Image 1: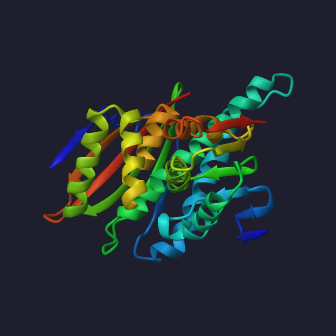
Image 2 (image 1 turned 45 degrees about the vertical axis):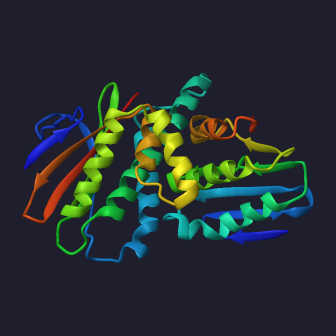
Length: 115
Length: 190
């Protein structure tokens, strides 16, 4: 397990299960500040597992720079053949239903689950 | 120069409209140290408007609607403030401000800040692109470009238009030869 803990958010990479959990409120100011999280996402992408999961069920807010980060991940994931990318979200959190579907336009095979 | 781009709505002071105005001085604290205040202000505005969309415990729809409006206001206010802070000319005493107007069928956000001429050219280019193109296609195009070169200019505006069905307009006023006062206006239907 690797994690980043901040006053407003936590990010945990569970290497054994190829799951990254992103929780809290993420409104960092652009790519440079997002870099530590981008690094964990890239590490997830290196995993040999057939299914890589991004869990945002407890991510209450994400700004547009954060949406850019997830978009970039989807574009990178296209080159991974035989790998399924899954995002688990919550239909109780309004931004998720509005914005996550755009990621499917970047990666049509993306599986989106709302709980 | 005093012009508008897109369908800008002028709101007169005399109009009897519920409104909240927050102003910040760019010179009083460096950007980095005040970044967290964007989120605090945005959450405050989101919470504030919920008063006008009361929950009725016997009707789950009202609770969903309240959460949705709160989320939209907080997202848009945060993006408007982030842009204002990012691009503001911070070497003078003009304030950065955000005003939220609550109308019967819509909420209007006005984000105002000064920018220098070069920044203004870039901004008006972005504004024209957003007004003239299919914004869904533009989003995909921007994301593809961002994957190669880390440039996500205009992305906040694009997400507001595409995901929140927002209308965006601008007003520009020259304050001197080198400085332009810009108001970005975001309108969402409620």
